[in-house]
Length: 72
Image 1 (cartoon, rainbow, N blue to C red):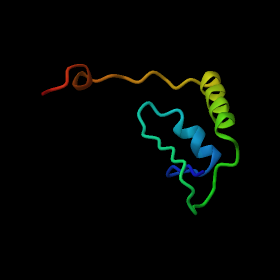
Image 2 (cartoon, rainbow, N blue to C red):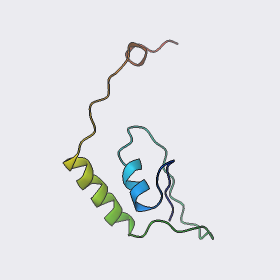
Image 3 (cartoon, one colour):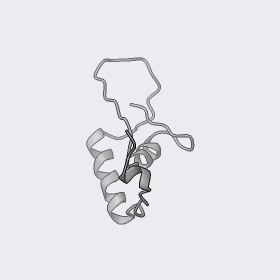
């Protein structure tokens, strides 16, 4: 129904969010009166997001020592 980032809204925001390595997504089937910014069906959005990631993969993330050896 709605996706947003600091820089974009709607389908473009969805595609941007789909490239994140860590994120929280929520899907709720309850009908709500909110702004609709996603214009395509979910399966279409997911397929396009995967196509974009395949064409332009994200550069590998550098892992710091704190991530490899977390403190307790």
